Image 1 (spheres, rainbow over the protein chains, first blue to last red):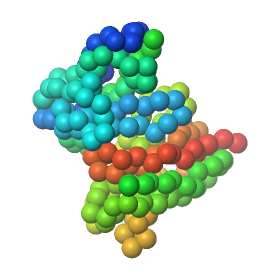
Image 2 (image 1 turned 180 degrees about the vertical axis):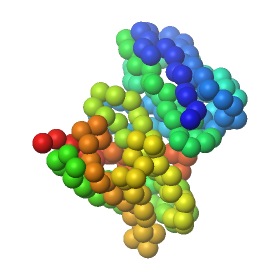
Image 3 (image 1 turned 30 degrees about the horizontal axis):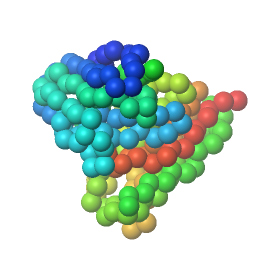
Length: 106
Length: 114
């Protein structure tokens, strides 16, 4: 199974900050990675697909980069509505595997 | 607009069975792979199973293999998850999702407890 190591597990930040979240895959997954945002009691929402493509309707302050085994999600200027938990997901091979999550807090 | 609506969750005793449904609308259901993903209370997301667009290929996490069965009825635009031999550790919100996956339902809670 491909392990997805996500860091940090939690992050304290302020409105306007630039933040970066990282996922490392245990083997090459090309660019078969998505990033998701989840707020309490809600379903996950995909932000990024194919490692770097912005999902329609998602603000441009979100961006993704990387390929192979190292991936990052960057939020260029945090807004109040961005405080949530973020997950990466690899869909290169079965079983699909999520990172452990990053809780972004004020 | 893509809509995925799960149903069928509830309280079940250990060893019991439950069948979840996911009603799809707003897209050509029979053209897309579908998934089930679960989230135990206070925990992270865990992929459970997937099924190909035509239903011929299915795939499972080791933790549910042999106990859960994914299926679909493309004529009814509905995805299913038959869950047998349920355990306490299967307690979670179960989400259906489309594609890679991009679109998600709102989830249905399954509680396994005596």
